Length: 245
Image (cartoon, rainbow, N blue to C red; front, side, top):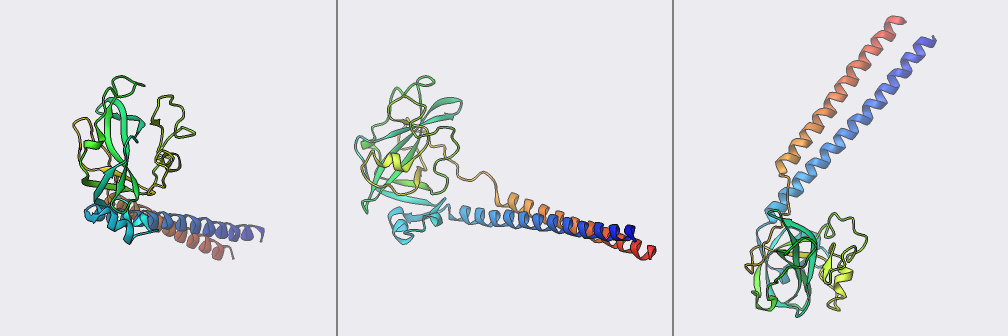
């Protein structure tokens, strides 16, 4: 009798464990499927959506819908205000990304990442920067709304650099102090070089939707395999119990 009870208990534990594995795999499959759909939407949105001002007005409070979109930007540059985003390397050269506030036609201010500017030496400021006030006032940008800070080990925007105007990550609260105004909670990346000293290098998406869908299929098949293994193992246990009786 004791052996029979142990056998029944093992069947129960096997069913529970298999159920957990199946649900986890199905959850991961759904997660990857959703990521693939979102990536498709993102890539489909990387077309000219018109003026950024219009998009900001129409999507007020829902800026996440604008993430990854390409927009035409119009306005004017804020005078005597810029930052250098540290720890940038392009084509093996160290340097910084030039970040400049830009006043849109509706008087909102958005940060523009104009691209990479090389430094004369590691941990040195660039020997020359473009004259921002002479840059075009209409151009195309890719809007980034999510994960503006990015990966960083710095505890604050200005730490550990002791170079004036250099920041370790984009902290909108800190940078807004430089213009004494609130900033649009996004960063616009210039699509083309606006000056010979600048090299745009921003890439928003690294994994294709097809890869996400492929991972979703893999997790789904693992769920099916786990369910089948549990089913046949349970049937085997049940036959053993019947035989013992």
